[in-house]
Length: 62
Image (cartoon, rainbow, N blue to C red; front, side, top):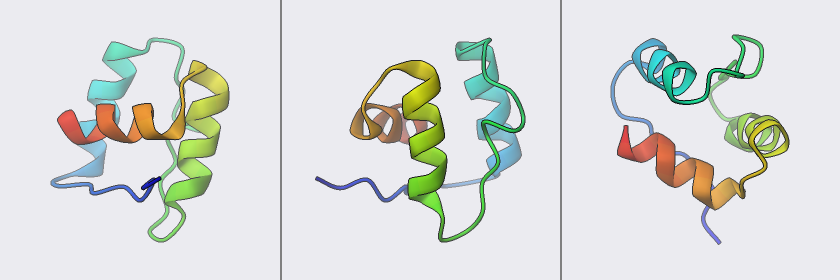
């Protein structure tokens, strides 16, 4: 199952959209470091109760 993120555009803009959609997310939850997509997805998976694939799909739709 593919969990690599395909982030297009500015991460700060996407981060803002995610915080609007999921009010319980913090800046720490949304820290993104190039090459550590799995770490980000793992934090979001735990916080949101969704699978990494669902989260990846949501991020890519934004």
